[in-house]
Amino acid sequence: MKSSTRRSLVLSVFALMGVSVVVVAQVDPPNNKVRARRQIHHHDGNAPHANGRLGDPLPDLTQDQLAAFTDGLGEFENVETPESGLGPVYNNTSCANCHSAPIVGGASAATVTRFGRMDKGVFDPLSQDGGSLMQSRAIDPAALEHVPADATVVAQRLVTPLFGAGLIEAIPDAAIQDLAKRKKADGVLGRPALVQDVTTGTMRVGRFGWKAQQATLLAFAADAYVNEMGITSRFFPTENAPNGDQKLLAEFDKTADPEDQVDPATGKSDIDKAADYMRFLAPPALPRVNSEVQLGLNLFMRVGCAECHVPTLFTGPNTVRALDRKPVNLFSDLLLHDMGSLNDGIAQADALANEMKTAPLWGLRHRAPYLHDGRAPTLFLAITGHDGEAAPARDRFNKLPSSQQKQLVDFLNSL
Image (cartoon, rainbow, N blue to C red; front, side, top):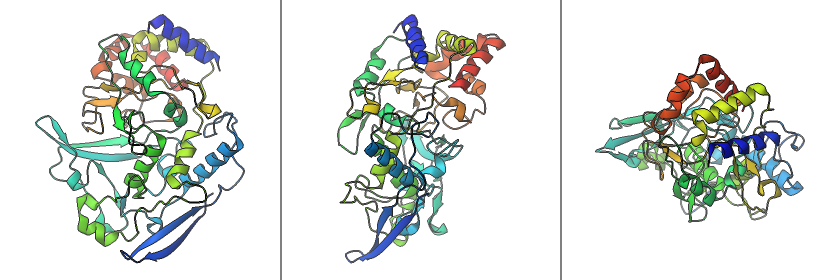
């Protein structure tokens, strides 16, 4: 795509301008584990409406879709307990505890720990030791995990925001693959992550997570439930053993799996409700274009940031009107790129250790710190910390006069 075409596209885009839980336990005779039946009531208060505020649902949702969003918000805020299946090892007790800033559905400064071992250029996630994700909490201190002594790679990852996730999900695989084929400046490459969607068994283009390791929101939710809260489901029916220790798992896992059961009346389980909430969550609003925003945007394009941070993609045909052929102003190509020294050293799904997905920039004004591990407290440091395929753009930014650097940073802070 020529730079003039990208600029006109961007300009046209800017011109558009309380939960209660009832846990009923019963004994499961075959394995003597308790079966937890989880019932989520409607979210307390009035149902949210699309008013253009952060955390609102998408506009043009039907009443049934708004109800699904509201029920999903309730599940998203639901606090898990050992009786409802929490643990035995976990990172937090609810989705909203991590996705909280500046409002439910956002990001936070919370990080998770990943570890593994690089052996002769091949990454070993140390799965036998509970890797590559370490759960930092446990329902009993005896089950607490630690980073194994033979891990040579230890990395932190920030929680990612979820605003507009349904629009990202609705971008066709082919559109992301086409971005990888287009001619780009500066030797920028980028490739789609091809992952198996656990919910369908099909190969899809990944788009969620720092490594684009999940392709759909239902898979993303199911993965988070088992790995962040220890809640098993129909897609991930097996608990994480503390540091891979099956004896500890047998000692502390007293709830029958899968813990998240489909409700026959609705055909949905908790992961489906959480996916509904994310799918119908509106994106951040675009900034109003003024002369300063326009100057910053021009510099963003001129420096070469848009080679990877593509301003706008589009959803394909969709049965949900709110997701049907809509612009997605995410500022990302959703591709994996070689980031040089700016990587976490963790290979995951289709991503190599040196690759990271281009982080969407929409909503940037609502989150700090920056980069995948929060190493950059300011956007200036985030830009100058880029490497690998982004090095030429970084170098051009570094050569700008300080006044123009500020204009570009101010533009990013408007997103």
